[in-house]
Image 1 (spheres, rainbow, N blue to C red):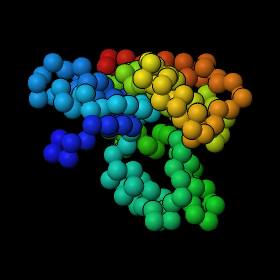
Image 2 (cartoon, one colour):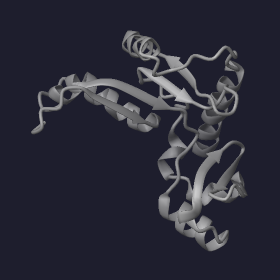
Image 3 (tube, rainbow, N blue to C red):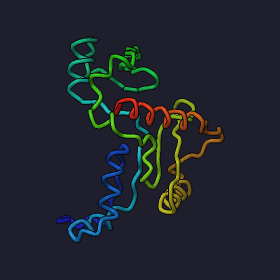
Image 4 (cartoon, rainbow, N blue to C red):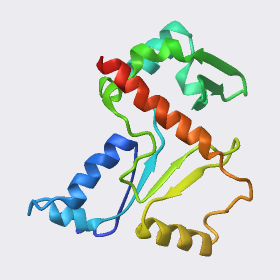
Length: 180
């Protein structure tokens, strides 16, 4: 607020988006200026997030002897795929990641960041592409402007919405299992 930022965009996983939504819709006089300054919220598809120390320091460095400075990319698609700078691949089964999942993720049922203006994720698209779900007029306007400015390319391939729905149901089911 001291810098008078008035046009803020936020990108986050569903729990972050839920918190931002509460700020945007709050009647609290202290929060209203922040809520009005947030112009765009992009939510990322999320099944869970990981504790950095447990994932990087314990699982990758100690257990799998991965030099983290040498990692090019991390990708979770049914398993953790760690692509190294030299192109080699380290694959870790999801079962090994359970101890690194943040506790709050075991209670979250929101896979696609429902309170965002635009949701984004790899699920439903072919590799190297991103699925976008436009949730409101704000999201639609920003998306259209990005297309108009050639900042976003729209693909011809259809999105597999059943894959998104399946993961969303699976996340909700896992939470209900954890609660019992």
